[in-house]
Image (cartoon, rainbow, N blue to C red; front, side, top):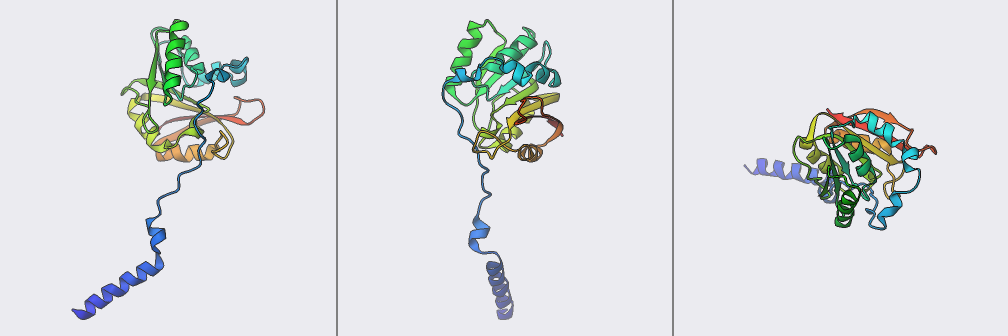
Amino acid sequence: MFARKSKTLAIALLLCCAFPSHTRAQAPAQRPTSTPYAGDLSIFDYPDRDKRLHINRVMDLLGIVPGKSVADIGAGSGWFTVRAAARVGLAGTVYAEDINPQAIESITQRAAREKLPNIRPLLGSVEDAKLPANSIDAVLILKTYHEFAHPIPLMLQLRPSLRPGAKIGIIDRFGSGTDHGIMPDVIVREMAQAGYKRLARYSFTKSDGQDYFLIFVVR
């Protein structure tokens, strides 16, 4: 009995030496993110943005047509929201999600001002966009993915809201995470962890080559 206890203690000591306590206890480091924008929302409605982003081509590729249901995640000023709402028409719906209550209030006023009753402003959280189940045909995340503090839980929570064949579009710019940009391979890796596969990649969304457009579907 004494020999058995001695052997067990020796194994435990070897494990402690091989894997120091600080290594065993460390949690995975969170990747760098940018602070969510909380300033003047009107800066997103600059002239020629439609043309520079080729937003109609983006909507074509995401299958945003009359009658469809769309989610604008990180909607901000509602710049894309109102364009999607015009595209899907009264038979469709656009959920304008943001974690900033001021953005939600601004979009609510904008929808009323522009007479777009098919817009549904929605206050989400950093881990849940809080979209209705089985309600979404297409998603666009426009220049906000680099701000997501918990991207994998957020995208996991999104899945039950997607209808079969739904496409998720992500437009962002090359960057380190802290400079309002993120590398596309980081997004692809995180989306894979959340159960999505990349369907396509495009570079037409910015003439200087600093932006990219990724499309994903559920695996």
